[in-house]
Length: 95
Image 1 (cartoon, helix red, strand yellow):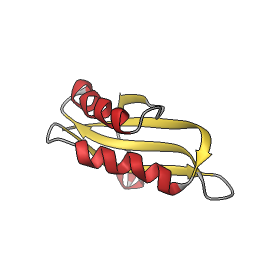
Image 2 (cartoon, helix red, strand yellow):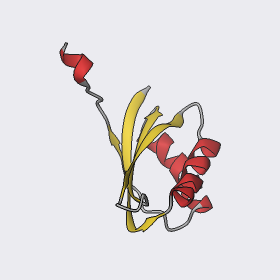
Image 3 (tube, rainbow, N blue to C red):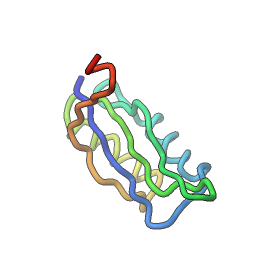
């Protein structure tokens, strides 16, 4: 299964509890062909979320987009940039 990344660049900071609504919806709508793996959140000085980067595994972009369409019905107005193909590289790659 291929890896993908997408970004939620929020227009204003939101509390973590509001961001969790999106995560729960992604988990609920994930399928064997497209599923949410994990996310990283960028927070401001107060601990509110300003940007979310999400890693997905999927058969293809279209499979992930079908899941995202359902998430955006659950949480209208959520900004979404992507999904984009992802190659994950970490320090272990270069040991």
